[in-house]
Image (tube, rainbow, N blue to C red):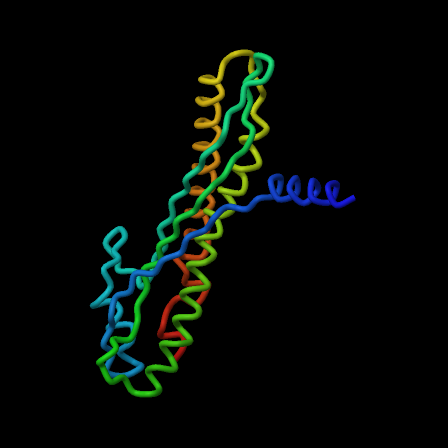
Length: 190
């Protein structure tokens, strides 16, 4: 009975493995003199620009995948797939040595939560893409004696999935007017 339960646990762990997600933050300091200058301070300090406009936060993600091919009785197939998602958030923070008024800190903290939630929605597309890569690569049709073709099929499928989720990410950006509909503008918090 113990062996049977161990087999079920191992099988479930392999079949329903989740991507490894590594998250990192890159901060830029802001120096607002009051809560009404918060937006101006982020605009002045932000290193993020897109199509000529300044952004207060961004997320960059990269998906890595690896798989094991196996050859049994002249048939090549994919035996196991693992994915890794590297996520880098670039966001503002109140400069440590800068004395911001208490009201400014409160407004910034509320804004920061909204900004991070918005950026997390963007990063969720990467995690979903990695999940789908793990699901779809193991479904690639086994081939007689051709592990190189399996390799090119896996690359094609993975690239297609990543492209699909990058489009979903961009559509989300457009649909929310670059976060405006999600509250990613500090002046709304005053």
